[in-house]
Image 1 (cartoon, helix red, strand yellow):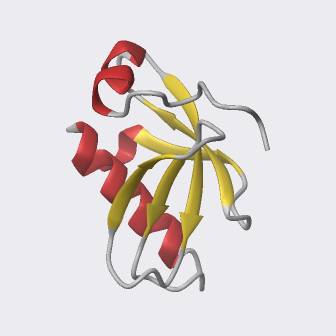
Image 2 (image 1 turned 120 degrees about the horizontal axis):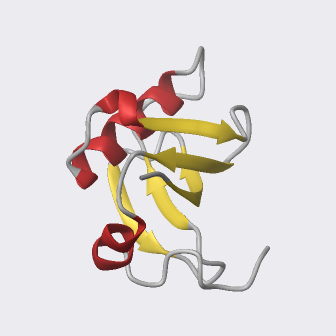
Image 3 (image 1 turned 135 degrees about the horizontal axis):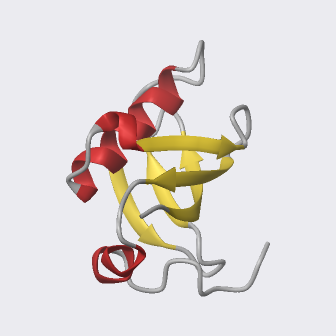
Length: 94
């Protein structure tokens, strides 16, 4: 099964961390990597894969490669996302 959700990424955020779900329903994530040559995107995918217990290849950015707001597709049961990050996708759009 696959699931899609929005992420608000902050590159050069000091450390790799998931800060929770924002009011807009997007997952707030920061990574230490800079937004150069895809380094921040790679760090984002690794962090999400680790958090969800899936292979790194099971996480893909399907929209927003060069933007802070991204759409992520993950090979995971959508019900698992609701358990790991309550409120994901349920906010008002921004």
